[in-house]
Length: 559
Image (cartoon, rainbow, N blue to C red; front, side, top):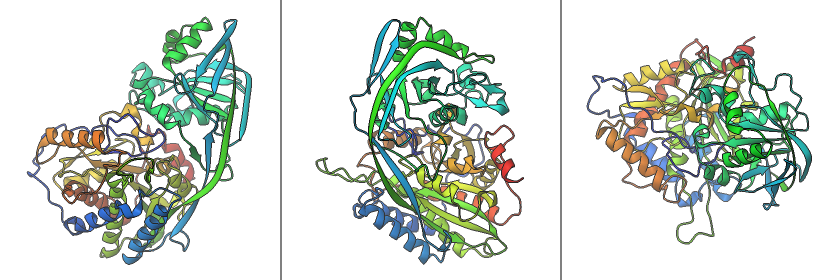
């Protein structure tokens, strides 16, 4: 995440909290009122109080592993307890998330490739970024053969396997970003321009590791990735976090990284190959991997540290079906403080994501007061380490207090829109599941409509905490106010959107101000509460769309 009312900013973390596109405006005129004034959450006072507290200097930017974490998690626990909720993690309010931190030490590293009778060297940050995902202090790769594997996709349901008949054990795979539907602009392939999980960089590395590769290099292209090279460079320049292998025993690459498109063109040309032609060939069925007459050598030296951080989990047990649950989620972590800065040093994270956590608390209070109480249990998970790769929600999904096959749906809140109320709520991942219909009804009760995000090819559905529920097969909803405001329309909405992206996103200026308009966020919270309340009172199970890549996981969990 960092998601949502987010921006066209250049410095976004790739794994999480990344920029969200401007939501699409409603496509048809409606008989909506001139505005919508929600009475939810004490007309917003309860929400504003929590938002102000969570984004105060007292909490020091809510960085995991610091005093800011201890103050933040204690406050959230206290608010849940005051609301009348119960500890949600098997009798505890907290769920400790173990972490491993991998920090590259030899940042003068090069990728040296023997090719064309000579050696081509690729420099760190300028030509490439690289890191160690296997948590080994020392990695030495010598004379690893290079293979171009197109998009590096193995998708049986799409009858597509770029690794078919190929043995890449010990080799270095070169991979394109995004997926064939985007590359070919063919609506019949995958989901056309809309990115599937097969297009995400995380999937590329996971699949390469499953195939036994020693290393994987993704060729960066701004259009396909959805962000420029500067985002990649910044995101890979510092320590990388992961769950320890004891929590996720899946294979991991010794070396993984990105190369610029210009670097790929230079490499392929030295190998006597046409990168543009091979790239185009990867877009169509029948693509054949291409071995390069080239071998890679590199050495990575890293420091490895273990740590932990806490999720805060609360529960309202269901009155009739307590073994089934709706899970609301929001990440509490942000960027902490930077003592090297002059002046303001604290990244308060008011929008990102004090809004989501404040919303989590007020929705919890609404459920606690609901009469009749919900039949199904409702879980409220304030998760950690979203900014470090969605690790808190990933751990929760692996260790849920109520099993994933008994979890009906996830509703995620990340960087709510602090603006006057919008006519539309934009759904990230529109069309993925039947939860869209639930939100449509909730929005209609407010005189509002739902719309799709504008740029589904950028893969925003995979960049916030709901994604880890989706991977386990749980239908997940991630939506927030759009930019077509009741008061001021598209012009005012986009101006506010752009202002946040340019002047406050991931900056110390993301602070609470008494003058902040909160009506839009309160209206969104009311809609999200209505969705969960309806689900919690039903016996039905919302389903994934037939073409969703997450449907198979849900189907398997129900067998």
